[in-house]
Length: 198
Image (cartoon, rainbow, N blue to C red; front, top):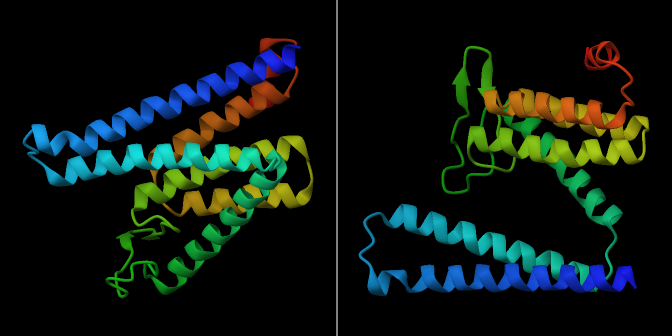
């Protein structure tokens, strides 16, 4: 009975989210008719963001109808993470972005430590953000099944994120690791907590 009630409430929330996102997207699509758009770039960026969010919601609801398990989705994300890291390594070796088809010879942003890799994302900071997002999923996968393969996935993604040279990504990974340690260790005292974090 509780499961049925929970399923109904989840379906209502999903329908509410879908309705709200559709209304936002319709409003934004019709906005140029009623309001003068001062910046076409900003308008198109926000429109694409909301459309992407709605499409992702529809995609995951579609996957749920086919009873795809959480494990399959996490495995797909793990494969994507490895491909992203391999692309980052190739970028670092060739010193080129490699995925900019309009300008194939585009060079990486250079720092005194080397070129800033970005993986499947065009921007340097975007690459770091992607690494952090993937890191969260890989930590979850490792927590569920602690083995050398899952640990190596985390290590490869960590190396990728380090070579994006994105400071906010470094900070985010530290916060994620802190949360991971606190959630996976039984804390009996403040001293033990500090020892585990160290």
